[in-house]
Image 1 (cartoon, rainbow, N blue to C red):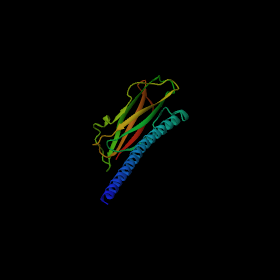
Image 2: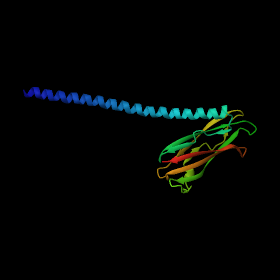
Image 3: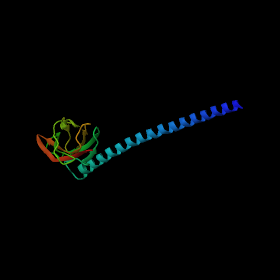
Image 4: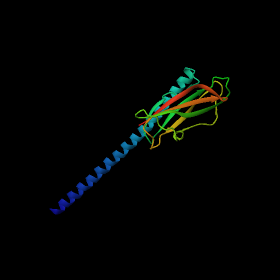
Length: 177
């Protein structure tokens, strides 16, 4: 009688182990599908930005465009803005982008010190070559540090050609949450 109980107990343990492995495998599969889904969403957002830039530059004939210019970014996170430039002619083929902080306010509306904030963003500050009638999309990456003060940060992106401003100044806002 004890042999039957021992065999039954070992069979139960074996069944529990098999069920546990199946559940673990399903959990890992689900985790990878969530991670893959997040990458798809990011790609769609990037495609949405590119599509909006294309619409503003080509269809509306804007010289400089920065769509989707407000973003809520958590501390320690990165957000990418897209800026488009269209060469309408008579200015040469070399363009430059400059980005600077215009204003910064904390959650209560008080001004935040602007020291060190210029290190938050990264963009192509080299000469950008665009043939006459052509257009290009460039990225402005804003990396908010962990110790950033929560609040609203207003940045200005300017494009210049031949040391003269080209197109309108483009503002973009980062709400640090």
